Length: 325
Image 1 (cartoon, rainbow, N blue to C red):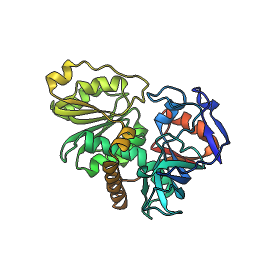
Image 2 (tube, rainbow, N blue to C red):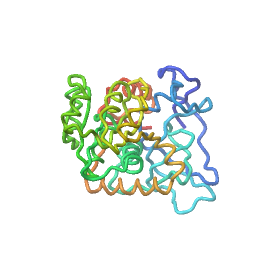
Image 3 (tube, helix red, strand yellow):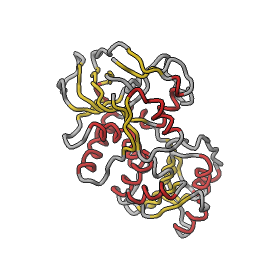
Image 4 (spheres, rainbow, N blue to C red):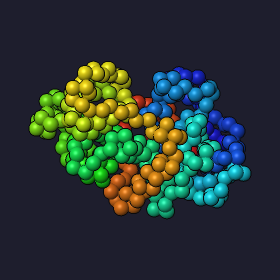
């Protein structure tokens, strides 16, 4: 089969599109014939050796895909060849024509969900949903601030925040990105390249502060948020798309009595597979009810993976990108 192979941690252009052996389903695995693979910011970091997880070399990157079941391990029950599913590999491998996934990481998808939407719903919406539901305990009527609200996880957080009944504030670096956040349900818009984020948040909340912050950006935006939290607020750390990992002054959560929580969706899916499966069913229902939807900014051939990852790294993407083997 054809696949993208990372032979060494290096710039994106050194990824190889090449022929490799087909995966074989171990006893508790399912092999999926990939129809679409989601492109995520961590994928670009991993292949360059810039992520906290550094898999053994060589490896096939990619964590999420949608497709049809090609082969089933001997200890797996409840699945059939040809069934439409999403899958998540614990050892990467989704940037390929086929991938082996643990059976507990394979979920049937409804008929009204396309392969492209299914592949792109999983990680971005899955991360935002887990963050706001399990880690942030977001309640109806609370104020939610979403940083990077035009990116894949940011758009998802705006949509899910509205579905959960929150007042959603979207913060982006440009007017065109804010327009995307507004089109996806944001109630209040902040252009933090033109407005002082901390001052604006104080004005918007009447000095109360933000109940829940969804931060996939880091950098200076995080610093402003750490000083803008409401009492009993929850500051959710998703990632560092700005390229700057900020430092937190610990007297702030002490004096303001708010909590700081990390959100690592991949770890969540491995440690709490039953809760993860329940989350996905809720997302499927919200998608069916048109409370959420997937924005796919572009479809790329598998051979153009480096181009897609470069666009994600440069923050040129509105929503998500997808690879079509």
